[in-house]
Image (tube, rainbow, N blue to C red; front, top):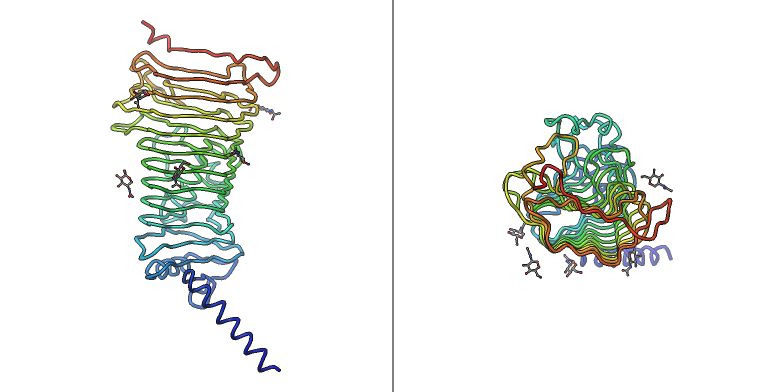
Length: 388
Ligand SMILES: *[C@@H]1O[C@H](CO)[C@@H](O)[C@H](O)[C@H]1NC(C)=O
Ligand SMILES: *[C@@H]1O[C@H](CO)[C@@H](O)[C@H](O)[C@H]1NC(C)=O
Ligand SMILES: *[C@@H]1O[C@H](CO)[C@@H](O)[C@H](O)[C@H]1NC(C)=O
Ligand SMILES: *[C@@H]1O[C@H](CO)[C@@H](O)[C@H](O)[C@H]1NC(C)=O
Ligand SMILES: *[C@@H]1O[C@H](CO)[C@@H](O)[C@H](O)[C@H]1NC(C)=O
């Protein structure tokens, strides 16, 4: 009887092993080979598991099982020989003191990978409280770099899904030069008083979809920087934070165009802004922001629900006379409903130098919270210095 049972168990084991193998080779950081243990540092085990998985000639999966692990530095680099998945089921915890990281601007990075999947239902905990209290970048131009939780660079055909980014010291996710990549089923959380904690920032990327994400931070929910094309943001909820933003654009030399943005079916609650396009005055070189569409958006008590600002200049002094050289055109706001915290629900600050063109507003219903006024107030402004 005992023999028969163990034979069955063996058979079951073989079966399980072979089905797993058919899927992907598994590199578990807590296995005897790598030796990670919950409660202690996982940095070395994870680096070794990654390099073995990345060298695997068939699809592979790096697994961080449930439990809390400390992680100091982690840059996962490709190219890998086959599709690779990192499944984080537990919690990875950054050192509270950013000085302990080897890469001053990044906690966890992924670079030069085709067909990466980051998944698992786990949490990246940036432990940002100390960094927020020390962040002086709003008044110090040469402030120290502050690490972002997750930096994705030069990825193609990838997916980031079912993970939580918690209490990042700086931006939660920074996406740079990535193509054809989807971000979905994400939870991103920092308190509303935490500075610069943008949820997802995208720059220099093409074909990025963000969908089904719940983002509450102290800064922009999603922000889209220069040289971005075909970016779609759907089914996202934002709040608290500063809303969804194109820009800021036009601050630096030789910025490239932003073309083809769709933001659809999103809900923003108690955010400082809703849908915003922001460009700096006195831009050093010309560029284009075009084909940008916001549709089916619900605003709940949003302070500036619809905003185009060609005079964007937070916390520094700008020469506002030379206009923004970012040409904004072919922009639509359609079916935007809910409530505005301020009476100025629609604000279009388009300056004379290179004025906005073809900006369309349809089905806008944004009464102020207190008065429930039926019609939104709409103001078209241009800076007094620029008026002829
Ligand atoms: C992404 O696409 C752009 C434009 O199509 C291309 O120039 C760039 O090399 C691609 N980047 C990667 C990492 O493949
Ligand atoms: C992103 O969404 C658009 C529109 O739904 C779709 O055409 C495109 O294939 C999607 N891209 C990716 C990378 O899934
Ligand atoms: C809109 O987004 C919500 C999630 O925020 C989702 O539950 C709902 O199905 C979406 N609606 C449509 C029509 O896609
Ligand atoms: C509405 O937004 C304002 C400004 O952000 C905030 O002070 C207020 O508490 C919000 N109201 C509710 C009911 O959340
Ligand atoms: C804006 O749309 C018009 C008409 O659809 C088109 O001719 C023009 O090229 C577009 N502008 C840009 C910068 O894409």
